[in-house]
Each structure stands twice: as structure tokens, then as C-alpha cells.
Image (cartoon, rainbow, N blue to C red):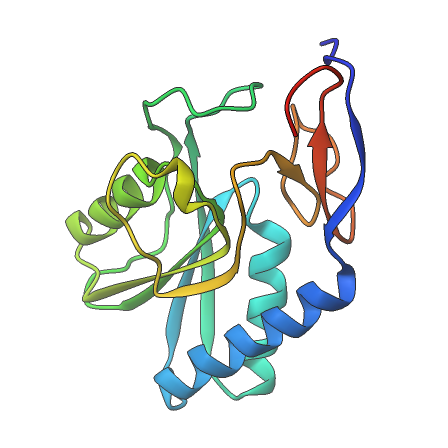
Length: 185
């Protein structure tokens, strides 16, 4: 696939800023858990790095956790949500009666997280809380507020720390803005 000309040199959140904010999220989640076990469900693919850092932090706080993933699709290879959420791969762990922390890279339209929360409740989760690395409220199409939020960002397309553009740039240790020549900032 050929990508449109673009640049990813503008760092929005540095590696150090992300680490500091993730540790603050871990502290808040651990304080809310009081050492009680937790099921972490990550939405693939964007959440995997964020979830791994949360998991290691919870371990340091003595919060036992198990992990599974589900794959939901709404973007394809584009830069905007299609407006439809499709379950591509379900999680396998039994969440019946469990407290679940649903982890996603970005809260944009709200459709994906609303869909995932409803799906977890249908599968019997006792309580579902949400944790997002990035929150982009300007794009909200469905009312949704995360329980834990890393950063609020404006209406811009970003990559890095798990977030991608057509499968690329997930490996960046920071979050960068994708600039397309000739488009508004």
C-alpha cells in the first residue's frame, strides 16, 4: 500500500512525558483496586504497548492481573473512523463476575469503547472500567467518558507508542503528529 505523503517529526508527547503519565495512571488504578485482582482486556492493535506498561506498573503495586485482547475494527487503513465497529477477534478469558479494565490507545468517536463495554457486560463482567492513553473529545460521536485518561489531545492524527498509520510507526517511543502536506494543521 502506498501512503499519502506525510511527516511524523513533530513530537506531541515525549517518551518521558508518556512514562510519567502512565505511572500516574497506574498509581490511580492501583489505589482504586486496593490489591484486588483485575482482568485487563486490551483492544488490539493500538493498545498493546500501553497495556504492557500498565501491567508492569500494576505488578509493582501488587495488583494481580490477567490479560487478554480483542480486536475491533473501525479505521481500516485510513485516518478517520468508518463509523462502524466490527468484532474481528474476541477475547477468550472468562470475565463472568470479574472486574475488568478495558484498555485502548485512543478514545475518538466513542463508538469502539461503547461497543467493547457493552460486549464485556454481555459476557458477564461485574464491572467494566476504561483506560485510554489519548482522549480526543472533539471527535466524539457517542457520549463516552473514560474512567482513566492519559492525555487529552486536539483533533489531529497521531502515531507512536502503539498507534499507527496503516500499520506503520507503532514502534516510536513517543507520540508524533502526522502532517500531510497541503492540509490544515
